[in-house]
Length: 245
Image (cartoon, rainbow, N blue to C red; front, side):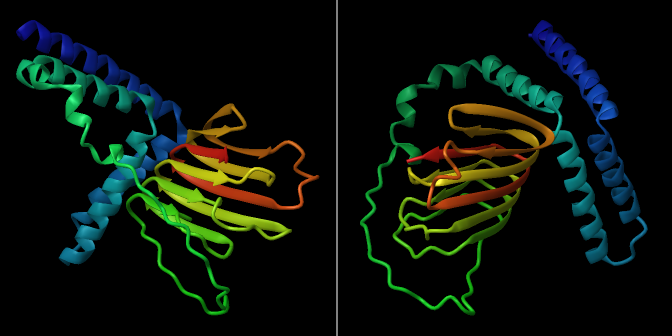
C-alpha cells in the first residue's frame, strides 16, 4: 500500500511541475492567478465581513478559473479519482453497470406538441438562470431572438419547434463554464462566430479545438438559404455543438 501511495505522490508531483510550467507560459492563466491571489490578500485588510467575503469569493473564483484553464489540473484530478477508486476495493467490487438502469438520464420523456399564439413582443420580460442546466425550445413557440448570459451549466437550444422568419435570426450566448448544444432545422443557413478560452466546436462533422481563439464558420449554401440563423457565442471553458435536425 505504501508503494502505491509513493507512486501516486510521484505522479502528482510531475503533474504539479507541469501545472507550474503551463501557468508561467500562459499569460492569461498567470495574470488571472496573480489577480486572484492579490484579491485574496486584500481581503485581510477589509473591516466589514460583507466586503471581506466578497473579496474572498472573487479571489477564489479567479484562482479557480486560472487552474481549470490548464490541462495539468484536469490530469491531476483524474489521476486522483482513479487512484482512490482502484485502491478502494470494496466500492470497486460493489460497482455494477446495472446500478445505472434507473438513472435519471435513462428516463424517456414524451413531449406533447402545443400550438403557440402570437403574443406582443414589446415590453416582454423573462428571467434565465445563471447556474444549472437548461433546455430552451422543448415546446412550440413563436420565434424571438435569443440572448443569454449564463455563468455555469449545460444549455440546449432547440430551434426545431419554431418557424424561423425569412430573414436573419440571432442567438447570442455568453457563458462561463459548460457545454452548449444548438439544434437547427435542416434547410436553414447557419453562421457561427464562437470565441473560447478552452473548448471545441463541433459543426458539419468537423471539430475545431480552440485555445484562447475565435472561429467563424458557415454552413454549405449559406447565401442561397432563405432562412438564416447567426449563432454568436462566447465561453470561457466549454464546448459548442451545432446539430442539424
